[in-house]
Image (cartoon, rainbow, N blue to C red; front, side, top):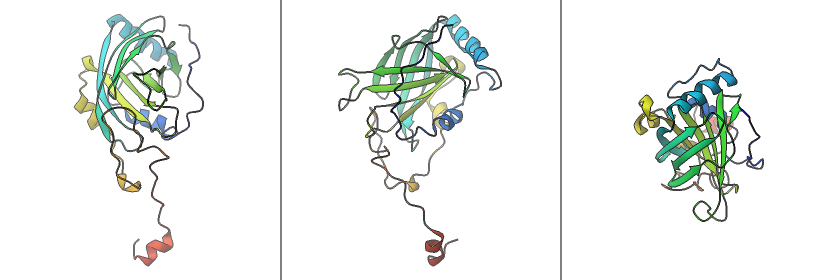
Length: 222
């Protein structure tokens, strides 16, 4: 399979980027191929398996990356072709996102999954003049990733989906999420039912400062 470099922007360095891999590991609700299998073997297992089945349906949830507050149900109907092309539609965060003209899948050696990068602009996808950017990671049975916009005003919105023919449901995927301790933040954010959150970006929501040992001793806390 011929692989090409993805077109991911190198200037996206806002919130949630550093812990992207830990988020991916936590999302493995349905086990696919063993982590001990190499990337090329994963490609044969994932790409050829779903190519034989044709279009495959996925279901799951979108959720705020920093807080893990659930946004809404998300689905996908995708077809992986043996030549590395991906086609279909993603329904995430209230958007119907066509996939098929965004390049080819490429190996992700860090997680034994495959990756795909999507950028969408135009009236249907832009907000405040900022295009929609999506990173997918998948192995055929499960799909995880995030959505954002180039501006640091926007947070990241993660999503996790699994194959419907493996018995996946929205409730099962949602139960696999690990809740975050919201008391560590300086506000209780509201996550919109559509679009990319702004309230939970690094610019708009801060971590509370940790109390020093001196302060805790004065308060009689251990």
